[in-house]
Length: 269
Image (cartoon, rainbow, N blue to C red):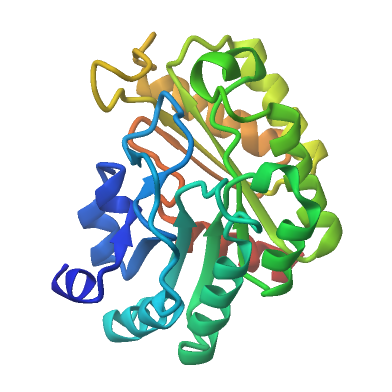
């Protein structure tokens, strides 16, 4: 934590109030949040600050790479606030950060959790060209709930991003995630999972939605742990190569372990 503060770096672990912060840090995994800590969107599920962001820090890619090296991270996830104010949505900054980490830490695996870049194929191409090991973009919820949960996003645009990323690099490990407990039905979740598979998504996370405050979207249902286990079994049977499903699962939950298991399964196939 001292190093992060000294370098003026943010982790989504802290900013989004993740319940798994201590576990991931102790396992040699951390999720850095680049491009500032103020988001240009107002999603009703998210705890990250909203408002006018500062200009990107040009030294941030190097600072993140330095932190990864000093912390001896085996696996790191890079995410960001959504920067609709930037011409490239921050995609160039993502690419610079990926390259800086790989240059200083050639053994470290890099996963990116990216925004939708407002549907720009060119911005997505910029990130894919930097060759992250995993590209993650969360659908978050079912299409019917987007107006209430992600009013500035579009379900089909997000799905298209995942499909395009796989088309740009067929060897790329693609990943997405959903929150449960927002009012979705079993059938709606199942349809989203089939949509993800059809788009080429290989890795999946399912977690319980927890409202950060009374001003955020309310929790409609606390999904029992056994239902999460059933979804995990079902998702594997449907064809996902890696699944993490449970009340406290978040996008980066055991991300390194999930990637390694998928890679090992592929080498045995």
